[in-house]
Image (cartoon, rainbow, N blue to C red):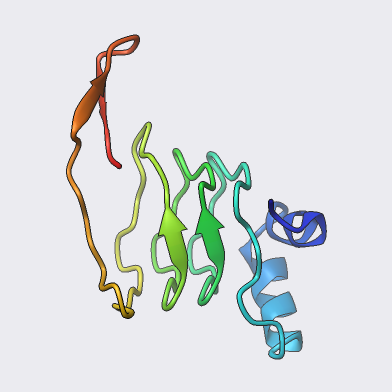
Length: 112
């Protein structure tokens, strides 16, 4: 689960988060796993090496965010903006797997 201290830093806005990242260069792999970040404006966020597994990023704006070496695994339930975001391929590579099933309750396809 996400580190509550980190959630208190990122939720108010990207400026505070990026400032914290700049002042804490020794912190690698910030744990935001399972974090509820739905609808949060993360434009330009320094999320390099962040653990975002199972984070709810629905309706989040990640335009221009640095996602290099981040661990990301989520289901897209609503629009997600990734324009001009930075990605890097790791050992497993950067992969996009299209929807394999439909959510029968909502009639929406889900990425897995």
